[in-house]
Amino acid sequence: MNLEASSRPILVVEDDADARAALIDILEFSGYSAVPAENGKKALEYLADASPPSLIILDLMMPEMNGWEFRAPQKKDPNLAAVPVVVVTAFSTANVDADGILIKPIDVDRLLDLVKHYVDAEPTQ
Amino acid sequence: MTDSEPPNSALNAEIEALEQAEAAAMLSGDASALENFWSEELVVNSTANIIAGKDMLLDLIRHGRLRLKTYQRKTMRLAQLGDIVVATGNETSQLDSDVITDFLYCSYMNVWKRAGGELKMIARHVGLISRTPQP
Image: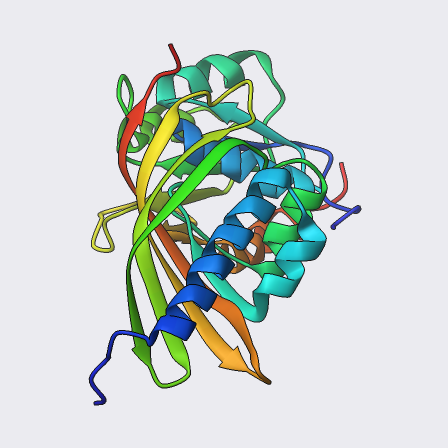
């Protein structure tokens, strides 16, 4: 368990309830704070009232607002543009503008390596 | 490549008993029993499309993050390949969760390997067939 992880939460944007709950559980159990959102629209609503997260884990294929549609306003927002984004997708050839990509099924070891890389490396707030 | 063959009746009974005992341990959240059933190298690919190993799964179970309310496993076919036995069939389950309350109907494949006289689960894959909302 990583007790020195950033105090800023990781935002998990995933429409599949099972996957979302599992990712939140794994991240929290690994010492990170994590917040769920069921699509891009819900994520933007959350971000409008919250401090920037330390990392966004973003599914691509979602109803209402998908991952590509979420990225446009996120990158334009000066408070959010610098937040690293790790995209989760079933398509290995997906055209994605992101800091990292996780292909489904998600290997937990690879997930936590990426989280450690982006979250633990950030300066203490 | 060696052809697989149906296991003999003794092995058949041993595996079926193991399959049911392991499922019972999952249902009761008995991490100590599961630790015995599972190889150190266990790899599980779950219905949540997440691949995890033994340590992470046991930690989640021990801390109540992975709990089942109902769980039934029906083994439909066994195949043996040397020290490896593959068991496949279907499972119905319901998480003990306020967030996810659906009944899940899944196909599964468990891979067991005999090492030091004992059969240990080395791999498991679960695929969602359908989900039914709780009435």
